Length: 213
Image (tube, rainbow, N blue to C red; front, side, top):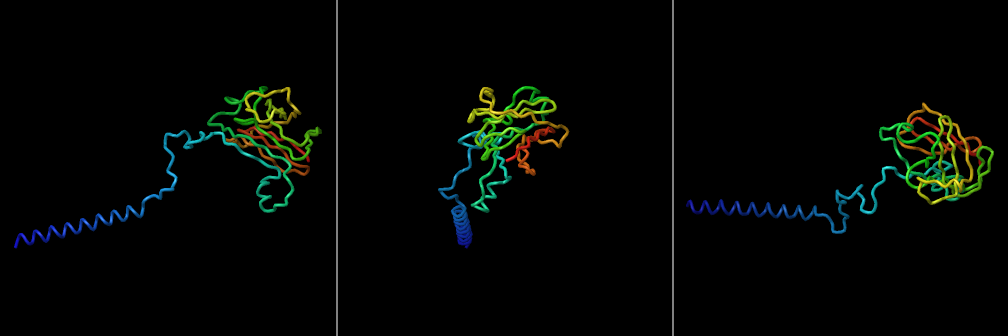
């Protein structure tokens, strides 16, 4: 009798274990990752990108009219933009602009990485000077109360070394300090009655260069 009881208990346990194993296999099969799913990048890849290291100074683009691509998306027949700036955004990282990054009276590339570029789709007038439509790089010489903004023909270059022999125009533009601080270097257009102000800001320094079209 005892042998029969032990056999029944053993058989019951065996069946229970078998059912549990089948359930586990079924669950594993349902949750398995499809073969064509892209796996996560290995943690040792710099910046989490297998093709290029992620830049801490990301590239940005500002249009005038502001948000022009959205305007064109809403109206495919919209007139072409008037101007565009492409630049990379360095950030302060707990530094002050003129106490660790820039020096007065020394040229600066107005951003990071590649030369900052402005494209005029139409002739513009800046401080009474006419600037033809076209692509230019921009750099500057910051002074304590003004910045000299320079348009240059040496396009598609790295920004650290400018070639003054290819300067097209120079504009001395007032600079103010004590403004609300900006962690990231910023270039944007702001609409005015005659065109736009090209606004350049970083830390508490702000420069506005009026442009008319």
